[in-house]
Image (cartoon, rainbow, N blue to C red):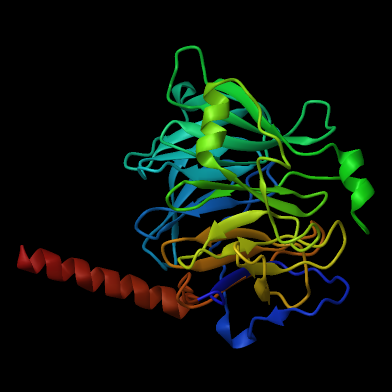
Length: 356
């Protein structure tokens, strides 16, 4: 279950008592897409059938089958530094958030097309996002003056005047949060936001304070519709204590309702992946796929209960590993192997001609 993990890259940091994934659970994966020019990462989610969908800041890729070994380009021209990719509740639309580029894109899952101006949505800069309903999206972003982070709600239903925007929640100012937290990084960052399967609970992390809170989706929607704001402390239910969890925020929710949280203890500090019980706040499991406690960015496949973990310090080369049931490893083909493949394809084609 939780140990079905993909690890991208290696980075050495200080010691932390984590549960390393066993080396024999992983196989090298060479077919993982690289970031497009000008992009710094690859984001992803899963489709309703369990296939992964990825965006590298240029192209959109669909996995050929759940657990399959190939990622096929289905659409191109979606430029930007990927912030997030979210699937709509009906499973028909992908929302691509271009990070610090103030734009988003809508892609039809059933008929993905290359970029066209009609697919673009004017939007503020953002870090992560998630659908609250078929038309409303919650976005975690920094305020324009970078003094704090905030949650805004966008209506992406296709209004001729562009998406309606309303700020419904701001996390505490950085100065106040730093005053109550020990050994925190110099700068604060946004984190992933997530909703549970029935879309009743929204999970928001203050990555500076490493403080995780749960908000009612109904209250968030009501605040958007009523042009009001929620209060971080009184409206949000604190999970655990500040400093208990890594900085990445909630990247997924398991079938048991447990939270998958990646990141690290702070800038340049040990990292990993935590499995957290949102009721008790207990960390049920600590994972370190690379074995070196790096910062992890996490993609969670909610259909197959698989974790995809990316670690990279932007200096060391990126390496990719996968468990056999998460992404099938394609065999390496040398000259003889390629020749054998061509012969097999030719024989198969000839059989089809004979049958015809």
